[in-house]
Image (cartoon, rainbow, N blue to C red):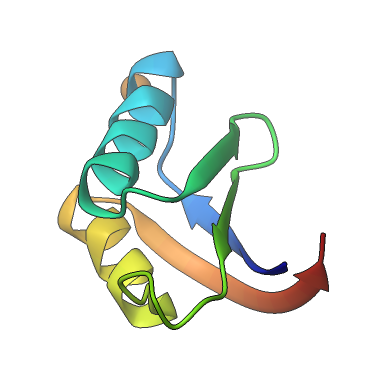
Length: 83
Ligand SMILES: [Cu+2]
């Protein structure tokens, strides 16, 4: 199965409250995603299946979701992996 992985540098996260807010918001909107947030480095990592049958997740949507919560997205990396 193909999987896509988006890694973003996010500025403005200060505590676990911020972390959970981002996690919950992404997972509420995109059902098949796995979200990992590292507070120390400000890294948000999102993994999702790269299959046409699932509702597509786009990088700009992910970015928008985080920005709508009031955080800055500085750097975005998109990777494709086989799992
Ligand atoms: Cu916080």
